[in-house]
Length: 149
Image 1 (tube, one colour):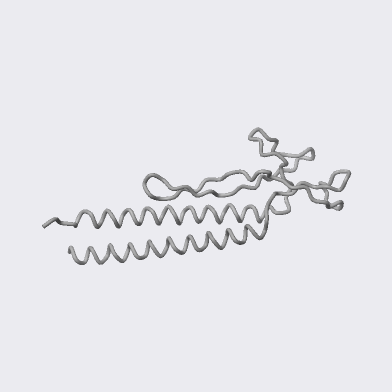
Image 2: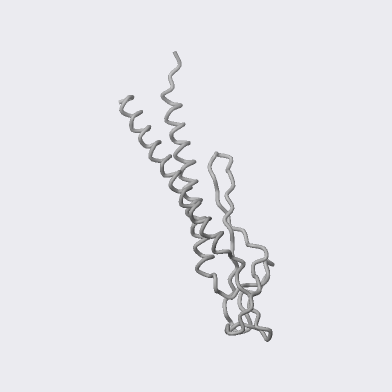
């Protein structure tokens, strides 16, 4: 008879590692979205060029919105990376804004509040699902130790 004592704990460890990476990715996705929402009315950088300027002529810091992109890893987990939104800015008509040009146009981050709310809800659900997996793996590990002990 083949013993599965070594295989079960490894499976539990793999499940925990995968769920932890998923929870971390969800946290990063939520943080990226929250940063975009917090800077919704900021002065945006009209360029996604990596050598772009970081301040405007008046010295105001320019905001570059980003998106979190999840990618699977070789170990079976997930990793979240940031990517610049392209285009990073959209022009809006707001002649009363302090950064408006002569035509009343301002550069605002290319951020959709609706998309960000959906992204935050999705990240929350992703976090909750991974947390449920962590709890289940913990219970399974505890039961396995009780059986083996």
